[in-house]
Image 1 (cartoon, helix red, strand yellow):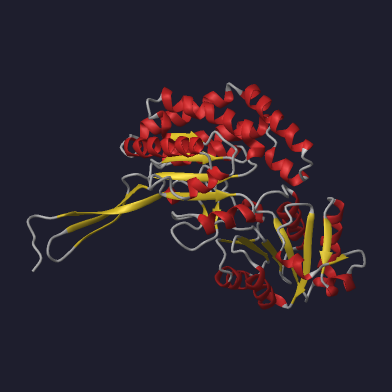
Image 2 (cartoon, helix red, strand yellow):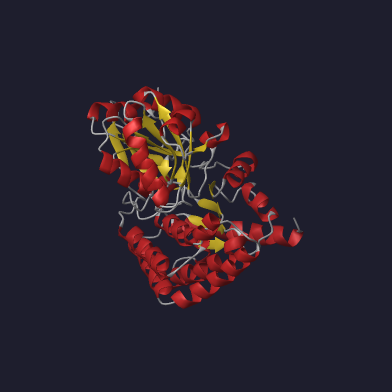
Length: 421
């Protein structure tokens, strides 16, 4: 890395640290006001954002990127409106800072409280989705954190255009303008320096992107990481499933948007009803434009299924492809998921509540579901306003990383002169 880039990043870290100290003391009203200004700014500059996005799209097409990647990159008026609506939704959430999480009194008269506080400075590294710029910036501000954003080179123009209107909202609300910053260079070495913690100015790093990005972050980071690996999401159709529900949920879980991490990648079907269920499910999948790859047993039931390879069970397609396997009931489904899961999101379709409860209890993923599409694995759909990502680890945050997950806590102890013997 050049000394010039290093100098710029270190200055960003120092400004972020100073901003975080002021932001931690900002009122809920002031933070919410900034989010509303940001939303208004985005609504009033849709054409500017689309112009910037068109530059990214043109460059992406020149580089022959995949359709699923392009889908994540593209902005339109509807998606931009969803972005500004998300900012207002985050503003409407209860302010987490200062919340009393617990309170008790010791026999010696000490009063102890556990109080929610900001994390400090958060580094967010993401790839093609430019909307993450707004989501991450807003969530961090709401939780009293400063944030340093590093978008992917493929969304550079879009992310920077959105960032300009976020920064303007901070200034309009009289909050520190460096509370949100975006790394100005696409030089990959900048990521490594951010992962080093920028000389202890960055407290947490959140990666949002593909497997290679997340693995790099987890391997190189010198600060804590909210882990998010692949979304190999499973949908299990039980013998007691309602066939119409199963068809609707399967199509939505796979095909609504194939390029998101909540898209179903593997369809598991109970052997007790496979001969009846699989032809119906295969038909609706094929009619929707989905390629179906299956195990030997599934190929014996439906002749036009493409043979699945061993690697299919561990592949996040992010495309119109799904792998199908016939399993021996709920235990077979659980065994398969436990072997191949990335602990993201898994769902069961069944009318048998006892079977559903077994699934919900024994599948240890960040999100487990019953009779609904895996595409609901989203902070906005959970009523959290938005999310930075879906954390699949087990420490601090798990599932959608929203406002509360971007906080920590401290203990406040009040006494009346007690001394320890």
